[in-house]
Image (cartoon, rainbow, N blue to C red; front, top):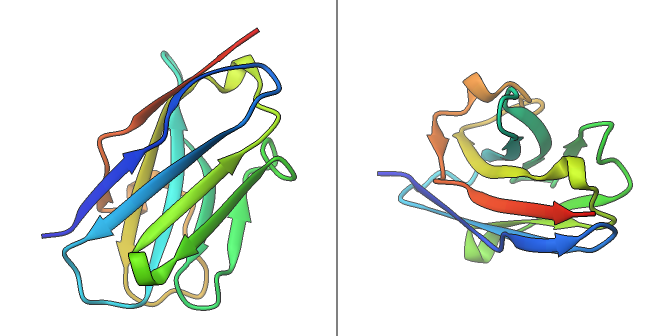
Length: 126
């Protein structure tokens, strides 16, 4: 059974940084898409970044481009999200999601990901 576990959330002041980690287990595929989503209270879940396991192609939402970096350590089956210059409006629950199998590009719609972590809270104070 595929399991996805996030860690690394917390509280930070505006302009600060956090690094989230996501460990995936319970599968044998070496081709997969991993993604970070976030959801603030009263708002829809939005895609933040994706990464493909082979070749490490990435995608970033326009709102985080240049400030966030998604990376992976395939030996550890772990994906990271380095978040810099955080803004108060980025306060949200951050979720990691996995989609197994080959892909020309990783989807950004949350409905395309069958495996989810429990989420980790990120709070940015002004």
